[in-house]
Length: 361
Image (cartoon, rainbow, N blue to C red; front, side):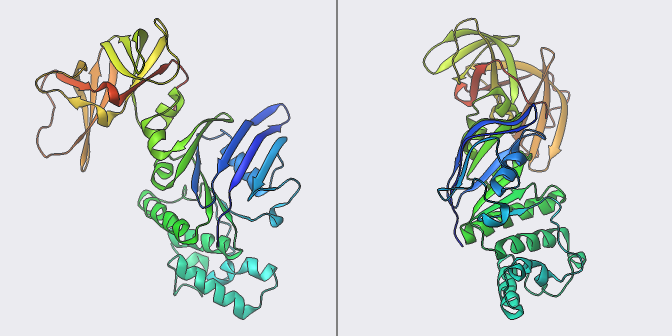
């Protein structure tokens, strides 16, 4: 098995007067684990269904391996699609489910069984061949669906929120499993999710969507560390937001006058003096100030402390605003009833962008 690249050229999808996907250009490399991330209704599943051939774009072209897929139906594309509900056949055994696509291609029973066993070994389900899907756990059924999709030897595997029905621990386990299967097969994976943790954990690159528009396409590190819009900054991971107006601008940094005083960060987007702006800083980039203050410092009181095992989330109140600080749990201070704390951050750990729409999820 090997992957092929996928390219969307000026693709638009409309349903009547509603534009589900605005004009989109997107190139996914062969053998890449690529995620499309966004809230419900943003158009990510519509893109997946267009790549699969279940929808024809209103305009634009979709190419797989350099070949135009226009008017080529789902069964004639080098793709396989795994739905959220898995759609396994309950009356068939596990191996029969895996080999179903081979049956449609006319393969004999012995060849189907042999190939099914190979694929079940790939997804760590050796010994489960003769069970029914109802006898398996949720994670095992997930792997059967993956093996069944791989049986038809696709170049591109399309996954539509396949982990959303699993509990947290199983989801975390399956993230690692999916990434390992993708690495072993070399197939191009296009993974649809609204879960930022899934996307960040598994992907080589991510496209973040909002209302039919791709806001940013980048590596996981850049999506998290260098968001290019307020929506991406607040949809992917937690962020503290400080609103104000630009008081100073140089080539790399901007200072924003806020209710907490003047705060500096790295510029993202065009800004000039007096512009409304937002400064973003991740909770783990905030530090408790002991001794000399960093360039950005403010005073706050602890309103809540949440323990998450190895980490502690401190919810602070300053100037009527909630600020979140993530710190390592060192087994020491509780931080309750200590009075005001001083927190700060380095300007290189913050980004300043023109005011724009934030995520409400």
